[in-house]
Length: 114
Image (cartoon, rainbow, N blue to C red; front, side, top):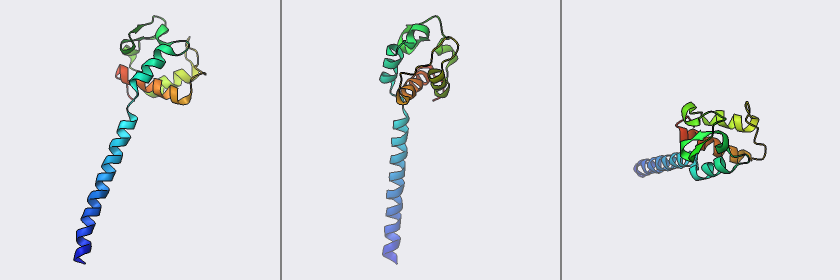
């Protein structure tokens, strides 16, 4: 019985360590890929940078809203990219993964919610 009592705390510590490590890995995976997002922002067709001002991308578009001012969250950006809004077209040539990367980038670059 005593041996079991010594093994169980070790197993709990190992389990807690694995849980913490997996949670940390999840947080790291959720961080936006800023370089890939920036590349999509300036390289998509048409480029977001043509219409939108975004300091991080060094763009000063004058047609769409200034993203640094409105600080959109990632969900709002993804919806606008997928469906278009106002004069902005839907970006049907972007994959779901590219849309998510771009939306996360804009949200992080502007200080909006992820």
